[in-house]
Image (cartoon, rainbow, N blue to C red; front, side, top):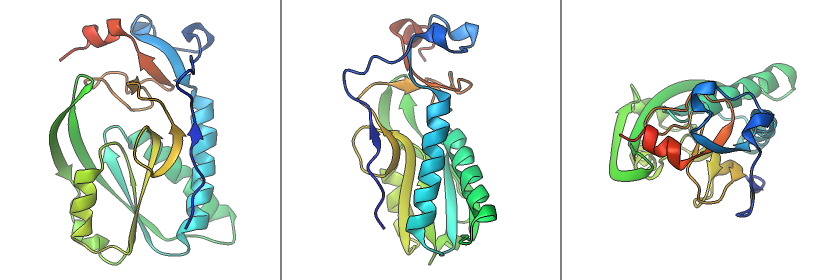
Length: 204
């Protein structure tokens, strides 16, 4: 199953001025730019849903949401997949589960991955899995214990690993669309670049 390459955003991409978008006032000084507008995120997510439906075949999928940073992308992606299931000749049986990975303090990885949730991962045996979220290596090694037919990781942004990806972005610390900085900015619709002022304001 081949998936198209992500939409690449160049290192010289400057983003969009904040005053062109609806930004919560409490974040006005905490962001540099809007990097990926919400409308673009949604359109790209719809396209990913189509590619997943095409690439995964008719197998039963366990959609595993990685909390907390993956919840918005996960919900939107599943909405599009469900719409395709309703409105096309081909449909995919799907169940849903949730797991939480925590590894960041401020804008640095702690190197200590905490895995929380996933009520019964043994139910994944012999099924296809789509993972959506941020930190994957620990979770992927955990999932391999249950011998799924295949594991596909879908994520909205990435800078290094190759998964099913919406946007390939430079190595910037981005927030919004459920991506956080010490739990802040999850309520922001757009993906934005945090400012130094924001980092200091919300530093742990």
